[in-house]
Image 1 (spheres, rainbow, N blue to C red):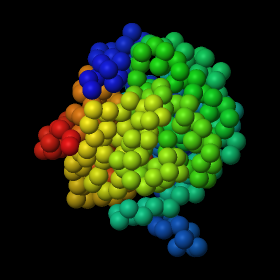
Image 2: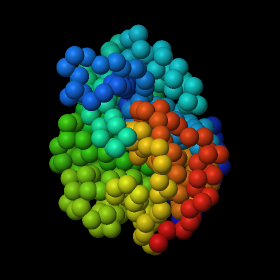
Image 3: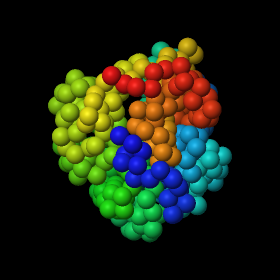
Length: 334
């Protein structure tokens, strides 16, 4: 599959952006020790994350001109939140504001892959995203740029769900590429609601990135990566990338399916946002003209590098570093 067929664009679209990211930005509070051990308190640091910001930062680092389409609050953390996004190379000029607090989460992680999360999202600014915002962004979405969005965004509320579908429809109608991660979260939605959203979005999707067994069991009823890829393609997704544990990523483009080698990171710290880093990187490289296999190889390399940092945007590798790591891996999958 070429970039032209997968992304709908091999050069910068008329609107000026290569990648648009629709979704939620969160304040991240990173605890220094396990939450269940923090009865007497723990030191923590504030950062900024959320799957949309993670993916947008990765897309920008991979060389794409990237804009964030989100709603953020008007509390004291909103200015540093947007400053952080801009520092990561993401255009925030299209972000909308709401007189509500930003959503937040508390994270504790260890180098062995264990993570604990506590979220505060109810009534957040991000949860006010709706079709009216998409209408305002219609010229951008109709420019031919690639779009990244997720099931997390769609699970924040009915308005968010309709915003995801509306944005996907506009991009699809304009010949752009959609990358969609169902990202099923039992705390936010039910399997039935997530499957209903998936059924609406999958036929519009150029690349569906998902996990197995977690997402696949809830959404397509299987713990087998190959079967999951077939079922997602049966719903209409043109290409599917399935993460199946450390070191395994199955890629299926309709003509062939097989595993890509995933380079190991010798110094893992925190895997938060690694999947978003993959999605942002591969979408950026598709939009910039790389074939799917090459773009995915860059995606897995960037995701591997990202786990050396703490939090969702703690380590966003530059493209030169990603390219160098990917160069040591076979570019074909099989």
